[in-house]
Length: 81
Image (cartoon, rainbow, N blue to C red; front, top):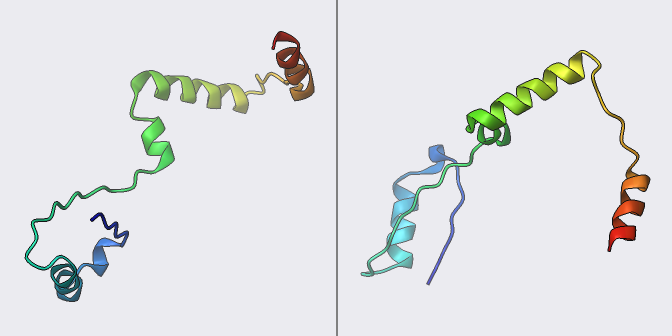
């Protein structure tokens, strides 16, 4: 049996533990704690990715941008298929 509970750490209390005990009476259970990670935090974990993103931000702020015509890309992709 697998059950997933998603809650804020502040919601952990004796009642929650009591409910878990009731649900899994006398069974061995495995608790895995997984904390959500912010997308930006995740992208900045890799030094190479961080550098690339920081450079892209600098380029955008200074007006160094490349305009892309999505219709043209789609047409090229369809042609190659």
